[in-house]
Structures are given as structure tokens and as C-alpha cells.
Amino acid sequence: MITPNTNYNNLKDSYLFYNIAQKTKAYLENNPDKKLLRLGIGDVSLPLCDEVIKALHTAVDDQAVKESFHGYMPECGAPFLRQTIADYYKKRGVALSPDEVFVSSGASDELGDILDLFDRSSSCLVIEPAYPAYVDANVMAGRKIVHLSSNKENGFLPVPDDNIKADILYICSPNNPTGAVFSRDQLQAWVDFANENGSVILFDAAYEAFIEDETLPHSIFELDNAQTCAIEICSLSKTAGFTGTRLGYTVISKSLVRNGMNLNDMWVRNRTTKTNGVSYIIQKGGAAVFTDEGQRQIHDNIKIYKNNAKILMEALDEVGIWYTGGKNAPYIWLKCPNNMGSWELFDFLLNKAQIVGTPGEGFGSCGEGYFRFSTFGSVEDTALAAERLIQLFGKE
Image (cartoon, rainbow, N blue to C red):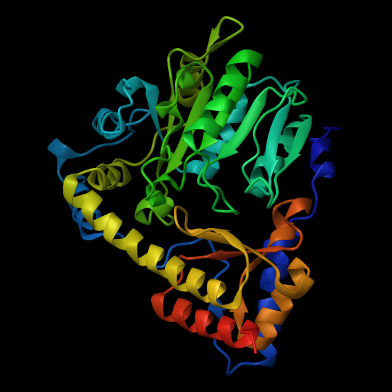
């Protein structure tokens, strides 16, 4: 009889978003006249920008004509999009060849698939609080996981030390859930550590477009010698609203070599074996994101989400609640007021103000006592939520 992957028995229940869904469902059933203000979801609320929509329509029309029809696309990405993304990096002073850029169906898919490059005996480091899939993907593979806790004292931005022993290093900056962003010096310390120890950094840059402080790095490849130790995974989901159309990209330098094996060559082999490429239509829409007009339009949308962040931060400032994030990231990570626990605050906000957020405990044990707000909601809901927060926690 076949033996299933018994590592699945080691997974913790995915209770975070299930519990949130169950609690909100029960509340609405008992209070059908109430409208929830959803500040927990990481999905976007604004539509794709006009430049992308035009490109998608044009690409659909291309598929209706024999001369411009496209079937299977190159597994690693259409040359026009790989070049476009390489040109985008060049504007930030990062020199890439197009064949160091791999087009994907999104960062979530790629963060799991990329583990194919590493032997299951390799260990991984997860800086927590963290996106839960980092841990779960490695539990499924049976890897040893090193949990590095971050905290308020270090701004949720820990630096490496000699006690850390791990082969794969997960770094997300701007961070989900905390919204914290590594400085150049802090990120350089991780790059130097990885090179010294032969580790590989998996750098999740899904939120780089939200950085407004230009002293902060958007890409790990802005750091010295990162090309010999890092893989960067990015997404157009939050950058340009592609959550429903699914498109991202991964950068692997040809200089990334471990034990005589070139990881760029390995990923080419992986993609040409396991995928048939991303749709021509979606890739044409993605290319439009990087045009001058596309950049202007997506940043107009990002400004709306940033204004949501400003509204929430001003409310938290007014009532004296500590938080990080918001300025250079679409998430606000706050200390639960009045010594509440994460789920206690969830229930309190749901029942007293109809606000739905995300309990920090769901991002790792060190997230207990903290809470995440997303700024991707509507302007109207965000403003109303801010008013209710002030009413609930305002000083008498």
C-alpha cells in the first residue's frame, strides 16, 4: 500500500483564517443588519489600472488572429516581459540579464516551488512573526526549521549572529505581517552572513512598491554581493492588483552557485519540466505595468492605500497605541491595547466596532499580543474604522 507524505501530520491546523471566517460568519448570522469593516484581508480592493486593461484587451484580440495567436509560452517567461523586468531593475542600479528573470504565476506559488532547488536535509530559518506558508512549505518537505523571533525592541528587524545555523534564510521586506523594512546596513548584514556561511536567502519582495523612503532598499540585489547568495521573489498582486490574474517574477543570478551547481541553470531545468509557462494574455498585461504610464497609474492606486494607512496611523497615534509599519508597507502591526491577547482584541473589535483584523498569534507565537491591520480596504471603510478606534480607545 502506498505511503502518503507523513510530514503532513506535523502541520499545525490552519486555524487562523478559518477561525476568522467562522467568527465573522457567526457574527453576521446573529447581526444581519451590521456591516463589517474588513481590515484583515490582504486582497486588494481597487481594479486593475487602465493601462493594464488596455493591454489585456489587445492581447485577447491577438489570440483571435492566426498571425498573432500564441499557444504555449516559453516556460521561463516571454522574452518581452523578461527584458521589461530587467529594465525595471536597471532603473534602480541593478544590472540583470533577461535570462536571470523568471516569470511566474505569483509569489505564493514560487515560494513553495523554489524549495525544489534544495535538498530536504537542508535547514531553513524563518524570522517570526512570518507569513505562515514559509513554515508550512518546509514542514511538508520534512525540513528542520529554525525559528528566529523578532520583537518590539529590535523593531521586528533582527540581525544575524553566530548562533544561527541554517541553509535557507527567509527574509521578507517590507514585511508581512509587521510592515517593518530592513535598512541597507541591516540587510547587508544578512547578505554577508549568507555568503560567509554558504546559505541562500529567499528574499520576498512582494511589497517593494510601497517603499517611499528611498534610503531603504527595494531589492536585495541593491546590496553588495547579493547575487552570490540570494533569490528574489516578487509579485504584481499588491503592486498592481494582480491578485485575481496571478503574475509574479523570480530573479536568480547566474552567479549563484552551491556545491558546484548553478541554481539559475537548475531553475531553468525545473521550470521547463514542471510548467508550461504563464498565459500570453496575462504577461502582456504585466508588461504594461512597467511602462511609464502603467507606473504612474499603479502608483496612483498605491497612494490610495497609503492614505488608508495614514488615516489608521493617525487614529492609533491619537489613542496612544504603539505600532510599526504603515509608512513603507501596506500593513500596520500594533500592540494590543489594555494588555489584551490577539484573539481577545479580535473579538472585542468585531463585537464592539464591527472591525475585522488579523490576530498576531497566527503569524507565530511571538505575534501574541499584537494585531495586524491591512490598508487594502476601501477608503470609506478605513475612515469609518479609524473613527471607531478613536471612540473605543480614546483617552477620557
